[in-house]
Amino acid sequence: MLYEALKKFTTRSTPFATVYIQATRLKIKMSIQTSDGSHESLKSLSLVAAHSHITGLGLDENLQPKESSQGMVGQLQARRAAGIILKMVQSGAIAGRAILVAGPPSTGKTALAMGLSQSLGKDVPFTAIAGSEIFSLELSKTEALTQAFRKSIGVKIKEETELIEGEVVEIQIDRSITGGHKQGKLTIKTTDMETIYELGNKMIEGLTKEKVLAGDVISIDKASGKITKLGRSFARSRDYDAMGADTKFVQCPEGELQKRKTVVHTVSLHEIDVINSRTQGFLALFSGDTGEIRSEVRDQINTKVAEWKEEGKAEIVPGVLFIDEVHMLDIECFSFINRALEDEFAPIVIMATNRGISKTRGTNYKSPHGLPLDLLDRSIIITTSNYNEQEIKTILSIRAQEEEVELTTEALDLLTKIGKDTSLRYSSNLISVAQQIAYKRKANSVDVQDVKRGYLLFLDSFRSVKFLQENRSQYIDDQGKVEITTLPTPTQTGDMMDTSA
Image (cartoon, rainbow, N blue to C red; front, side, top):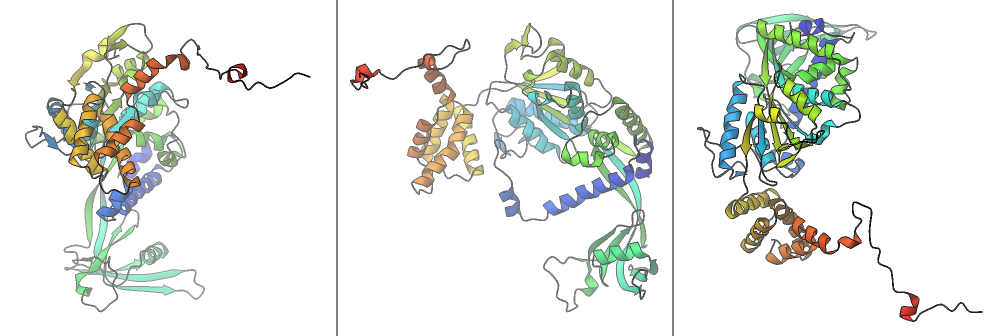
């Protein structure tokens, strides 16, 4: 069984099976709770971010990109290339590849990665980090990168469990006079058979906690004793009981009472590392305070996972590691990535940068995109290009829709012109600014005057640079020099204080 196997390679005295069961159940419970709300409530909880409008790569069944779909606009060639990478990831056969997405700022590199992550589905792990994140005081650079790599490798662990599923006919609970010892009988049936089970204290507590009554359809896990209430039997639907709005009616199970069921647990290699690294590993999963994990622990886990793979108990799911602003890494990190890409458990590494010919951090020589030539040689390079006017207009329209801002046609045209002359980011930021200005004059929609007002209040990068050049003397330069303007002297104003005796 899974839990027995997991016990074998626990490096501390931690009851790993218990911890793993608790972690799995907690995850399941959390997912059930979050998925229970309505669409409106979920939408209200989600924050509007820079790429919250992206739901996929916008490809058809033949991996051909649509002009505007799933929040993605333009960049047809780059999206077609990302679609091929998507198929590589989903097949799971090809891992350890490096893909570099290079292009000017504000051309949709991060959006491409977000679209890819949305298209992968929940079973494929996706980890996104920024290049500067690994320079932490708590972890070494190699440890931070190793954790990021192992977060991107999923392990599907299959386990067969025995379940008892049926409709409760009758529950008899006998309590002693002192109230200490309880015993009882549970009569449970399917369409084909009916059986009476003796109940102990633990089972009685479980049934009481779940508020199981006669007529409920329940499932009992024989290994853990966990009781799950599946719903109310259709046979009792005609009873004149006061049912809640959330009461679910289900059919009475067919066949045997005892059934074998295959359960699949999906965890990442990093989660297994953390749980086995120290006694409080289970809590470290939620606190994030994992600390350095010893290489011996990882070696043991790799060996065990490889055994499970050979035995057919587990399946390796190579995911995606996305490193944004990859030029921020230094030569030591690049050397580590070169080695990590050739490892047995390696994800597909997607890197993004907007640098041209620049210095590789930690060296004195220049290279394309700030990456060393050996890593560049291992990479498949995807380029992104600047958006044209029509694409900028479409993106701004989608962003306004996402932020629930009503734009007039003239305001959208003006924002498009601003986006073409300055940058797409600046223009999209003006949407919410203009909305606040429109609120102030009690208008329902954003007009040209609101956009103009926002444009005058907030500088773009080009006007900011021009302002600095014109007033450079008033700012402190890199040598620490500055011209401090003084107020006119009293003699100049004629308002001198008389200090004479």
